[in-house]
Length: 284
Image (cartoon, rainbow, N blue to C red; front, side):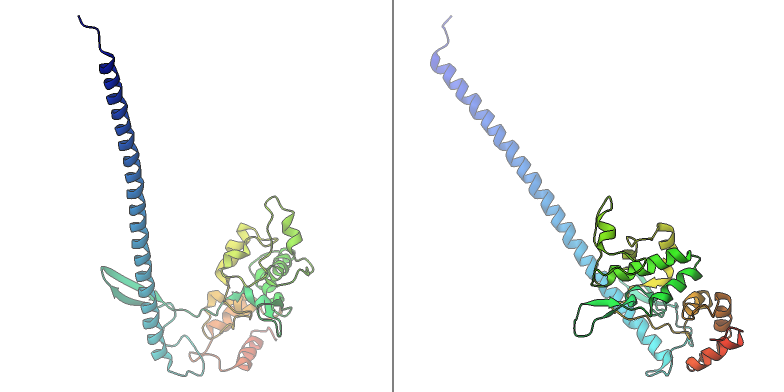
């Protein structure tokens, strides 16, 4: 038997090394192709989601426009006062869309306590907000009507105003940065208007239970002004929003009676509302 030639061994080793190199290249290319396909799949899905979102937004705008047009027709182009006449509030307005049917509901979005109304814009300083001391008692009053303890209500109202205002001057029972930086997870106050009611959650004194209680009654309109409560569009179950406007002179039950006895055309002016409150035995 002939002994293996050194050249044969060398060529065999070269073929083995070449095969191993090819296998490594195939593995690398396969990984790269898989990564590229995953990125392509993700990009395709993101593009599809973006298109779907834009389409849904367009449908929402269309439904809003249609609903507002129908409400305007019911109220007239220049109504002296907005009332519930015409049964427009919370009435569903249908909008056919490809593959389905959309529904829009319109209600008076001003019937809520605007958290951003706890501050007002400083004169000559756009974007700078100072506390509005006249509105804070209304927020306290609303919380008290919703069975929030008075001391907790005072703390939350002052803390919310401090959270929004631009300075670091802490109000009595309020809280500025110093009250939050010492917590286990430190954070600072916003120093600007709230964009969503959920921003009330980290304010000193707030608890999940109190937030759940307050959520149906509060809003964050993008203006540093109190929300104009329209007594002519309030529902009886929204009586706390009416009662909060009176400093302990109108209880929820009396406010509900005033709303239930509201004329079909609504109250003509504040004087008529004051008279109705007086007839309930709660003079203002």
